[in-house]
Image (cartoon, one colour):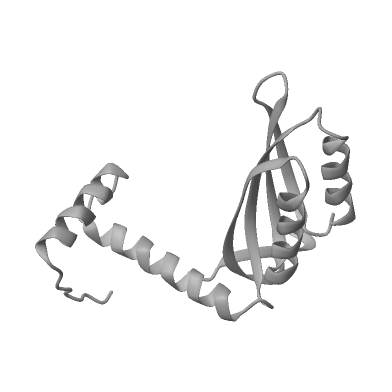
Length: 153
């Protein structure tokens, strides 16, 4: 493991410590590692739209609006190759929250997420992407080849 020293002004250092503690970090090193991972993922995703990713798409919508639930469901069926799983939560009598786990090529995942978020009536949409490496493997525990998704950072 490599060690390095960083210098920063007192005010920035104090703010960083406060945020790291508020988020539950027990030490600065892990907080810095997470910041670096996020920085690397952001950088990688900005230049590589062809790589693979795993992602979560969250959004809220009113299920009474213009057959919106049907439109969203149809979009997921049209992109069944990207959608791994969805969870649907009833927030109140009208509003639903959906969390969808997606896997595929970054540009395809982004395009699909933008399509869902831009659907008239969908609110509070957010996509979180993590770059991954895909590999097909067969192990002694299973004779059937299956896909492994490993984070790149």
